[in-house]
Image (cartoon, rainbow, N blue to C red; front, side):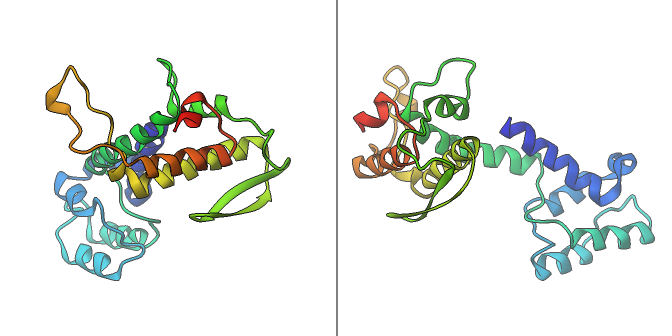
Length: 207
């Protein structure tokens, strides 16, 4: 689902720039020039894009309109290149979360975590949000929001510390051996956060 959302975002951004009917006129050079840039936030990026030879198949008037739309892009301009690059990064983070549970075939990490959630240890009608490494605040929210924001917080922790939690070595494949072992203290922090947010599995308790 997350991958599909990313791909939809790519289409939305480029459709917003030139319109659905003109997507086929965007050349490879334009995509390469735009990907990973933040013209809506960076005046440097916007200036460099204006000075480059992009949208070559468009008229001067169309290009001027497109440059104005570039200012409205929220965040980085996505592309298939950034998609595959980000997928590799996110896989490392998801591998960290897989230590918290056994993920059945045909089920995502998100779905498995959602099944392990229980509000028994949570304040009913509230969502717990981590604001520092060891402090939380509560805000009003539904059980569904508790699950969603809980998973997001676990992903955020994995993003910060994934180098300290490499996947375990694969004995049958020495080429894919992990260069280092996971840091037990970091694993404990991940498990503690998961438990504090209402997720409970034998793997979480074992960590």
